[in-house]
Image (cartoon, rainbow, N blue to C red):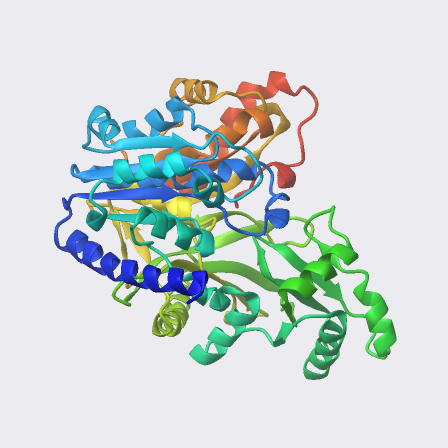
Length: 515
């Protein structure tokens, strides 16, 4: 038996243990257990390097501290670089009905002190003393589990090293999360999705697919060429068709005019990655009005699929495909329809053995009529819409009403939010966490449990170096959430104006503009 086969067998044994832990947690909310959080971004590091302040995305799972509401829960959170203690205190003090001191005693914040551009899981596996310390902190491995941003062979190996199950999919199933795998899942689920072709690996494959796509859609103007393992809009290129009478050679020449989200991408580099990872070509749907909603799902260890949330995503960048932020929930006109489509997709994934959280991106379009929706891609991992919804749960203690897709606080009040992990300005550079908290408290823009409304900030560690952070603005109506968003941005701009006199960047480049 090979090493990978042995790992796979051991992993399957551990995963059976996850079902027991989950069943106990569902039966007894005060069940004694230990959560190990490793927010490793185990993705293509070349693509990740294009994301400003990517190293601080490890802070996006700090909302997992919600688990400390259980007085018998312990939590271990690992990062590449230490998280500022004021940031940890910020979250602990927002836990409702739990003394911060009590929660702090049950929390271990650990760092590997390694800022190299590699997945955190890889760094942890390189440190045997750290692994031994983690096993000591975990204690009873029968009452523990591992949570990660995404699941690869690195996370599987880490789970095996710690002898605890991974609350996520078996990496052997990652093929379902590639762009080619997505299209196959959509087809099996009977869900509407763009015309196109998958399992492509070369320039010739792309050219043939583009030609056949034009044959299917004679009026098509643009198509998208996607690398199988791209994420966040990185790895997607937009192709503009030449005139209908163009020859194959002219179309091939036009292919060299692909446009990308990253200004540093080149045709040669893109095609090299495409050949290595494979990819797809599909139509770029055009309409008088388009939106980019998404649905977040969760498949439990017993295989049951659960709706988590729906959002209107706000996309931008040079190709209009970069995730900038979101509004919760998705539009009333098509929210329940999207949830039904997502359920079909979830059932196909569950039947294939996938568990854990995942998101499904859709495109909603219309031309002077009703909305039409297309499933665009599946992200078998946490994503940009995961932290803001966790923030809502973290702060309010409410839950989603699956029928309506709305989130209800314990008192029955519906909650809405506007959120972004891309709030940035040159003027914000140099702000330390304590500076941000001074602004929050003195200007009164923080979250208030008394009203169940306000702003929660995250990715705070990226402020000083990159002038970037994330925030979730929670209101009792969509309009109230948008007003809070605008007020928070205005406040930060006013408090840092002296840092950047006369150099205010364009709004579209600095932060998400809410309607």
